[in-house]
Image (tube, rainbow, N blue to C red; front, top):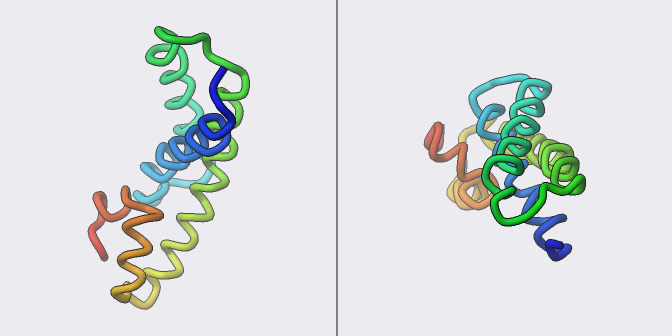
Length: 107
C-alpha cells in the first residue's frame, strides 16, 4: 500500500545504506548484499510488520536495487578517495555516502 516514491526511492535508499554499512569497511559485494538482504528482511518482519504486512516488493526491491545503488556509490567513493578528497568531493561524499564519513572521516 506504500506509494511508489516510498517503494522505489525510499526502500532502495535504505537498502543502499545497509549495503554501504558493510562495504565501506571493506567487505565483499556478496557479503554486503547478504547483509542488506538479512537486515531489510528483519526490518520488514520485526519492525514494519507491526503496522503493515511485509510485501514482496519491499523484500525484493530493498536489497537488490539498494545493493546496486550502494555499489555505484561505493565505487564513486573509491574513485574520489584515490587522490584525496577535494572540498567539492567532501561535500558530494557527505551527501551520497554519509555512512562513509561517519565510519572513516575524510580519509
